[in-house]
Length: 204
Image 1: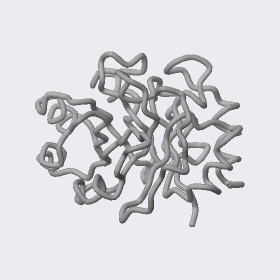
Image 2: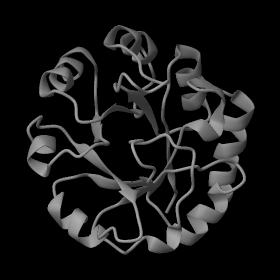
Image 3: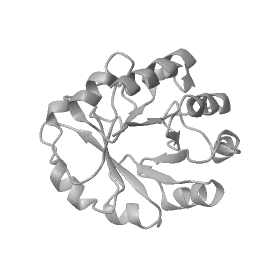
């Protein structure tokens, strides 16, 4: 099965267009103000307006006030919500939209329990753990910690051109999620890195 690709932390229209042109399946928009890749709803509208069909737009939140999530849902053609904080399953379900639940993997993380707890999630996204940082760490975690679960796995955390093919071979994820690994600066994507990353995924 083909490994899907989500390119996260999109902040510019031209980056979104190029990512789609190169075959990205999903684009991630960050609505978490402390993040260097955070954008406003107005910026998001400019980025996604008129993009081709069959590209998923994913809105990322971290323990957000529900009203902030509803505002995005009402203003943008969201396909998926991504929750990267300590949100409960009940919180995630209240919006009536498909969602991804992110998990920062540690040695004692019980992925089977988490997958059962968030049984309504479309997929579980696995990211690196770094104290006080909900995501976008640029750090790879120990993939051997990944257990087999009854949900599609989206692999994140420090992926780049050099390691993504190996990651796909070892983990066999449904999708990979990249942000910093295809950037020239935080929030500014690099065309050459995106092109090379997509080629490596195809080779993986």
